[in-house]
Amino acid sequence: MGSLGGQSKLPPILDFSVLRGRRLTTTTTTVAFRSKDAALRTEFLQELGQACRDKGFFQLTNHGVSAELQQSIFAAAKELFDLPLEEKLQARLTPSTKGRGYETIGDQMLEPGAAPDTKEAIYLGEDLPADHPRVLQGEYGCGSNIYPRSLGPRWHETCMEYFYAMTALAQEVMRALACALDIPEDYFDRFTESAPTATLRLVHYPPTPRTVSDNEENNKARGCGAHRDFGCVTLLLQDQVGGLQVQDEETGEFLAVDPCPGAYVVNLGNLMARWTNHHYTSNTHRVMNFSPADRYSIPFFFSGNATYTLETIPGLEQRPPSALTRKFGPVIPPEPYGPVSVTDFLRDQFVQSYKRASDYRPESPKTVNATT
Image (tube, rainbow, N blue to C red; front, side, top):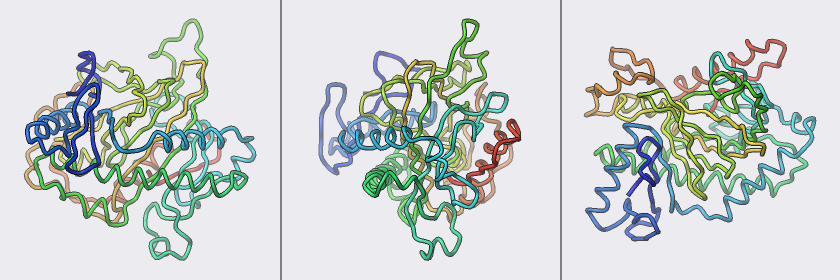
């Protein structure tokens, strides 16, 4: 079970079922999380836990999301990004749009020292009207979606169908993560099922020109700069162009994560790393699109209930020594973490990433997005 071809440094490919108590098989492994076979379930959870501790990344197949829905969301992305720039800018992401809207190339800079990210994207979330109680209370990440109206209501309906499918999958993944930590399966339920905050992002990476002298390390151009995700868990659907790279935190090398058709690349964010006191890790990754083709990806960022206060999970107070010795890992303070709200934790990280871009390119509009 797990990684293919003996590539132990790469995120393992794991089979998963959202059908309770049902056993399915594929050409590579047997679905185990919901299997009644105790040995299979134990093996799966051990490998999942190992991936979360060592890499913070894994790929997920047999997840229950239909190929038709995946194809529909890619078609929606292409339809959006094929629009003229002036039309896309009518739905521009600004501080007043509550984390919704379109960002153009160069608006965000995730990697200090690199150029601003060479990507365009749109942010969508649960579509709540202005008079909804969560919006009126100013809850983090709550608001109405904005997008070019020429796309029509069917475009938005497709995006929302996909959004809710991802919400359900993220909740199921969180239960598996709890089991792999050997805590009750429903430990995260109050966080994941009570008014969760999540963002669906459609992203387009145009090809990045490469000169004869360029290589991946001296070229400052990034489709998406090296970073760790900010929230709890990310579910990424990528096309077959490739370009996603995950850092080996022992050597510093960036390893290509080749697309697995229909699979989700799942990675843990800084919120989950902090909550588990680094028993689970959040790993550095980036996108380098040196392909001559346009790349499309559909990340779904799940951050749970924004009003929730994070405190180290009971039983995980002892920080694992491996978290402090990774050569290329995050700088971890020696003192224990105190409580922090999800809202405060996320807002601080997002503001920093957009401030870097506006400082680098001071003549550009400042479009700080403070949601996942």
